[in-house]
Length: 158
Image (cartoon, rainbow, N blue to C red; front, top):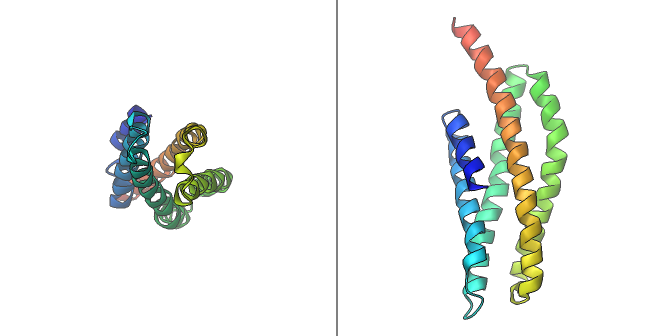
């Protein structure tokens, strides 16, 4: 998962400062997620790391919904990118579903259910699969919008 995160940052890192920051947050999210497998389950280490992960998770999904997706949609509208807007309408419902699952994971930890290691591990594995899917959907959206806008912008400058 970390490798695909780095590839996305290399491909689209310079598109926009907002996307740069967001891709960096994604990288931090993946690192925090991966570290959950390695944490000690004694002495409260698990709860501390889970809460740290959840904070990064909530920041990431919030930035996506309230900043990045809005910016990408606005750009698509500004460039008259019907293909990008159609793609967004197709992708956003699935991303919303994954966001709900991510927030449910956060709520699990906020409610103090982190002590049930089996329950947390099952939820963590499910969340990992969903985050991987989400990253692919986000990458697709960024690629389509960036490519379309880059071509229009280059044509206008020529």
